[in-house]
Length: 197
Image 1 (tube, one colour):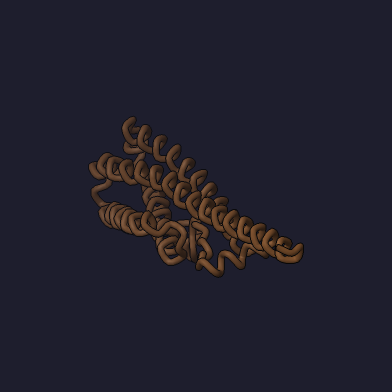
Image 2 (tube, helix red, strand yellow):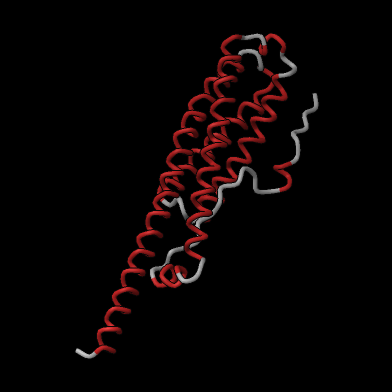
């Protein structure tokens, strides 16, 4: 073999090793997104288990607030359905956007529920409600932390997939951009809850 042939083989081998490394890095980062969503899922399940208990305690005091309780229950069901969809596709934007919208609806319903609680002093004094509310607050903090980890994993993956020269490998193997999970998706959902009696 001649020196130019050996040089071409060495350069080809180096490019191949780099491409394999870039591909494996993209796969690892994509898998980290799935793992990060699994952490969100654990916290969401905990929240979903707490909400019916909270509503049940409140139900006996809030006879005239049936609509508020039903909104919370319906919003919870939407989030569960959206979560199930994201589990199978944690790095696709459609399911992530659906989950973000469902989360916004649930946050709005829970905000109204909490505002209505203020008008029931005997309910606010109920120890079971206090315990459940405290647990729900801790769970919400864990959801926020898990959401941040998910978004960090998505950002790392997107940065790797979009930077040159790794974007060439990402394009060849159809690595798609991962979506960020936002707490709310519309200006209406960002406004404070208004309650009138």
